Length: 173
Image (cartoon, rainbow, N blue to C red; front, side, top):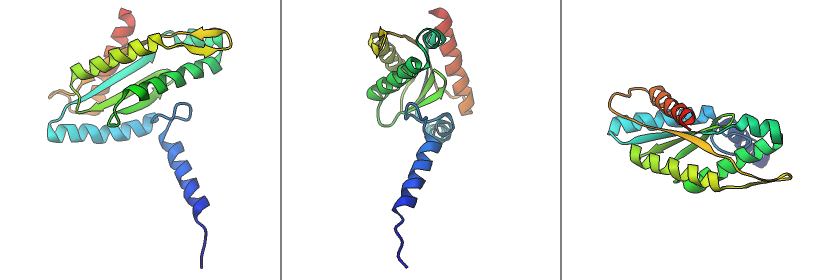
């Protein structure tokens, strides 16, 4: 018996993609990011390797959605994802964490290296103009950076540090 499994294989690939990626940006979704992050964190601990995390959030995103509409908000999120992908290494793990918040896990990266990347991303995004029907739209982001240290025993503790740094940056301007 001979069957063409092309359609079945294509459906399996589509379902895998849907389960692992954010549909708007094509980045990892939160669930897949946590799976990858857990494995990377365990590897970094086992081999005593550096691991850094960058958390990013679009500043005043609600204002963009309220004044320009959700479609423009989606354009901003997509533009941010494209800019992130252009600046990251193939070994980095970018994800849409939720809403207008993003996470990047950076294996083999010290805190200083992740901080440099976060600043490069911040500057690139501040210079970016999203073209809309109402004209160009500029936006900014805040970033929080954290790195694995000897006293971080679980990945969620690293996430909490990154999140705290992000909110300190947001409140600090």
